[in-house]
Amino acid sequence: MTLAKAPARTPVIPKRAMVLAAGLGTRMRPLTNSLPKPLVRVHDRPLIDWALDHLAEVGVEEAVVNLHHLPDLIRRHLADRTHPRILFSDETGERLETGGGVARALPLLGEDPFFVVNSDVLWLNGTQSALKLMARAWDSEAMDALLLLHPLAAAHGYDGFGDFTLDEIGRPQRRTELHMAPFVFAGVQILHPRLFEALPDGPFSLNVLYDRALSEERLAGVVHDGEWYHVGTPLALANTEAILGQHSSMSDQ
Image (cartoon, rainbow, N blue to C red; front, side):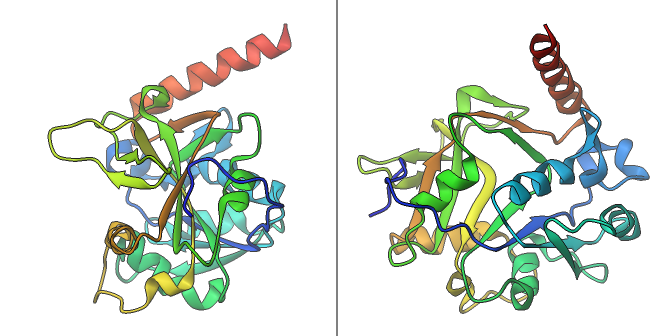
């Protein structure tokens, strides 16, 4: 059964993960003319470090980082990182989009379920670790993909109409045209390698695979109860910095 609220089971944390870092960051220009978006700093930490630190905290051992725009800067930044250990997937010759990028990296990710994290999202855990929440909810027999969802009303830096609703037993459903949806996909997920069987040719979006899993009732979602930020533009970056700065000021008092 796919539930939006994680059942009370001991989490089995995936040992491998992928951080999607091959985007061009066009909406973040001019910052990304000379800096890959994953290295844009938020509260004096590069975005990619926020993601990797979360992965390290729950015991992920290896993280694959895909590369395209200004790849040498990312390689140098991560050269000394050991927790998690970093592997690179080179997409400098061709941008493969999210689905194609993960498909290219499958030989590095192994045969077990793995985390995938967008490098332009930042989250603060709520009552518990979001990644542990997902691990508790994961059911390999019933799921091929598990998405972290965040309430639209509390999604900082997001300017869309939402992505998913949840049905009466907690399964995600796509937003219908001309309607808003109460939940945003938070850019964090657990995927099983079998989801990538019978792949499309060339670059493709992970949305293609979500729709397949949805049609087979093998897509699930859990709702994040902490804070979440989409850092996709200079304005979103400034707003995120301001809010996190307020948090720091309050904690120092």
